[in-house]
Image 1 (cartoon, rainbow, N blue to C red):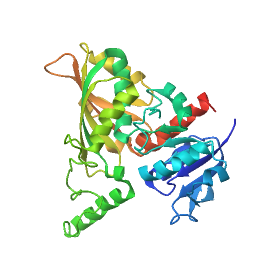
Image 2: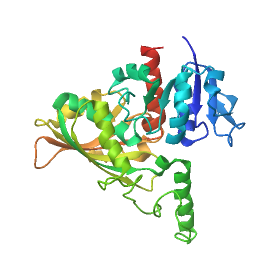
Image 3: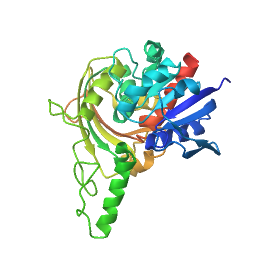
Image 4: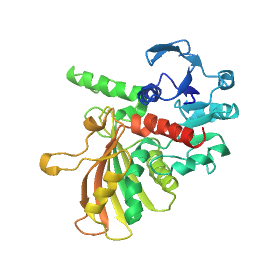
Amino acid sequence: MRKYNVAVVGATGAVGEELFRVLEEVDFPIANLVPLASARSAGSMIEFQGKEHKVYELTESVFEEKEVEIAFFSAGGSISAHYAPYAAEAGAVVIDNTSHFRMEANVPLVVPECNPDDISAWKNTGIIANPNCSTIQMVQVLKPLDDVFGISRVDVSTYQAVSGAGKEGMNELVSQMQDFFAFKLGESAPKVFQHQIALNLIPHIDVFMENDYTKEEMKMVNETQKILGKTMEISATCVRVPVIRSHSESITIHFDNDVSVERAIQALKDAPNVVVLDDPSKNEYPMPIIASDTDDTYVGRIRKDINRDNVLHLWCVADQLRVGAATNAVRIAQKWIEMEG
């Protein structure tokens, strides 16, 4: 099997670290690994497949110098905006985890379980965009149901873990909980989140837009339609919760026709990388503690609306650092190799 020179931009960040784990677990065909980060982190070492690898400074020329063929970006939108074109010009396919390129018409936005054929459009710019973490797990559930019943509207409320805000978000929750047990909670101002996150919920992720939705909520609206290739009514409310890892979502789905719960469950069972966990009699349903550190999207609490036969309610949970970022990016790369490599 051919092997590739692979770069990871943001090698020392939360998603970067998860990328290395996933690449190792799937035995990705790597000839030469090129960890990249800011000048501050350059020179440090990361471990991969039992070996130490030096972190190099991210520069405009490093992709050509290292003959990079696949470049994963997970270091923030401004970094991708500046450096991704240099990687593409050097001949690499860029798989970008940030929001910067997602809604550009000539850049494919891909969840391999939903729209793998869109990967072929990478030749337009050399870039493939990885969707928002909350969007990925939702469309993995929506796609098989849309294929069977036809979706007309989606209403989703998210319960998003603090790791969605990176290492700093996780550290802030842990620090505040430590303060709570030391009877000091509330003495220091929050830095990552708008309010105290420990023992609290914050219905505010990213900035508010003119329509009073947040940017995070509008990402789910716009990205879902681009990935599924159809216009539908979507509304989202995104909430930060004091959970370290794995996002949860409560989803209400309106269909064009009456829906059968049994057929819906079967469609979800048949869907790739979706696990149906739904037995209320045994208290079995998806939870962050179950989804964390896995590569599946878990769905349960599947039930028909008590008033309308064309409406279904369900609950889904997935590890947003893996399914919502690293794993999806690696699956894109694997599919790209299958199609284009």
